[in-house]
Length: 205
Image (cartoon, rainbow, N blue to C red; front, side):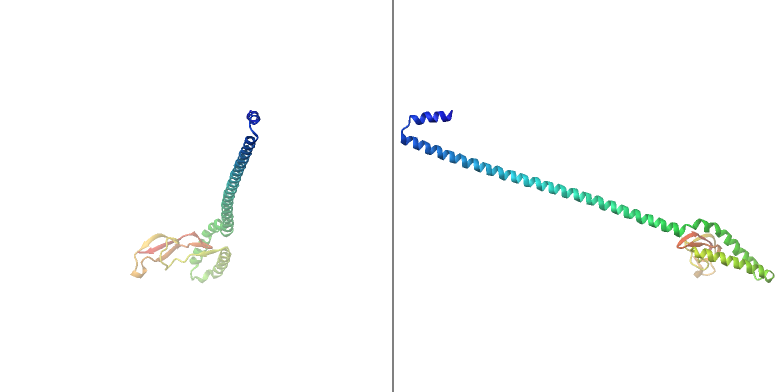
């Protein structure tokens, strides 16, 4: 419609006016083209900026996911290492103390041997029998010591509740004797570095 009006207007114009009109239209057309071009450039810049921001967000998101996965991996690895160490320790303890129940069951027999040896005393009438019992006792103790059995030192030592169990108390003969073990009723034992039986002792007070 605009073009038809323009043509109609041009027919009624003088040549000079027509040239001026055409020139103005050309300028307007150029101005509109320049404006459209600027708009297109602005739109392109905006799209590029949006695209860059979108890529930046994606990179940030991937970075966060990577950090999260890395954290999960480190936690899982740490848990596995703890589990492996605990399992290895349990295996080592099983090997080291696996014979504990058996040895604890044998200790009363060791006590009986020691009482038998005390009963022999210095009597030479049963020297041969005593010698045989001593040999068996020494062999038994040697075998148990190879398995890690060791007697706890008690008599004359300062009372230690981690090693000794006081079954009686006795007045000390002097100040230096106070708090010390003056007699051992039942011998205590270690298995390697673990106390498997406390020494039953009499303590001076």
